[in-house]
Amino acid sequence: MTVTSKGEESGAVLEVEDLSVEFPTDDGIVRAVRGVGYRLEPRESLGIVGESGSGKSVTALAVMGLLPGSARVRGSVRFEGTELLGLSDARLSDLRGSGIAMIFQDPMTSLNPVYTVGYQITETLVRHQPGLKARAARARAAELLGIVGIPSPERRVDSYPHEMSGGMRQRVVIAIAMANDPDVIIADEPTTALDVTVQAQILDALQTARAETGAALVLITHDLGVVAGHTDRVAVMYAGRIVETGSVEDIFYTPRMPYTLGLLGSLPRLDREEERLTPITGSPPSLLNLPPGCPFAPRCPMRREPCDASEPAPRRTGSDTHLSACHFADELVDTGAGEVFDAVGADAAALARFADTVNAPEEDSV
Ligand code: ADP
Ligand code: MG
Image (tube, protein in one colour):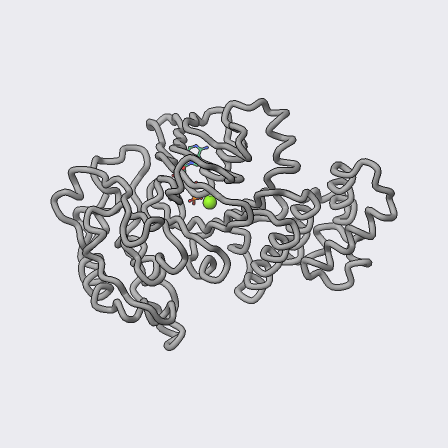
């Protein structure tokens, strides 16, 4: 599915088209990503949301050329017009250094424990500006640490990663991403390991990095709440596919895929903080032997005959840029304008029906 329907004309920085990834295993072929597509305009931000195992990380790793050799990758990934699939390791690693930066859940994936954070930032700076003098590089490193919210940055340049908290390390990773001056930042669950207060600060630091570098952002998370204030558009993934995509407003106010409604249902309510709305129960299907039909059907309160027969193609619902892969997308009534969380509340009837059905014994789930 392509997120925008702008046709061929392309100022896009990143275009992913019909991307599929399969892993041959002893038990069979794991179809981790099945025909994912999106395009990212300069400076735009896209949230990719879905439960664990829905193919979010594999999609990101495929874009970055970081999948293990056993992975079978098909489709197209174009960065500023250049096809990345099939590119040599050397060219890809150049690109990772400059064009596209990736931020992982665990900052230690990107940091080297034996060098100070200052050294790691200046190394990146000098790679981009070979003439840069040591003192200027150090000053810029401290400045970058300050920009991402690290206190006493002039002192902190001499710290080693293990001398910092998880949140501070993640800020360092963001500072390094900025030093690369990327056109695209892909952040894969950058805040998942952190507590809620620190999460918000890291998301802010990410926005700062975006503003300073002019990079477009792909923010991957299992938590719809994280994308609410931080991305322009949202793509919801389920069982290796994008099942709904639209603007943040489309997704929060007028979700047209029962799975999205379920994700919204598991958001905490602001008015009754102690209470959570109905979460989705059951688990996602195995990607080893997907039955025909909609992979969400076994957990879906709206399941009917066509759902088991064929997997719905994503199609336009509501606005031009709002797509849903549900046979019955148009039966999901608009929740209307209002506060995001009110909107969820306004759809209480649908959620209650959802809860009744989904919480029933799951004899027919996979
Ligand atoms: P998410 O990031 O959405 O939690 P992933 O993209 O990590 O999910 O994984 C998608 C699916 O691909 C999962 O079922 C996972 O087990 C499978 N997978 C990921 N990497 C491999 C691999 N190297 N070999 C086999 N299966 C894999
Ligand atoms: Mg992941």
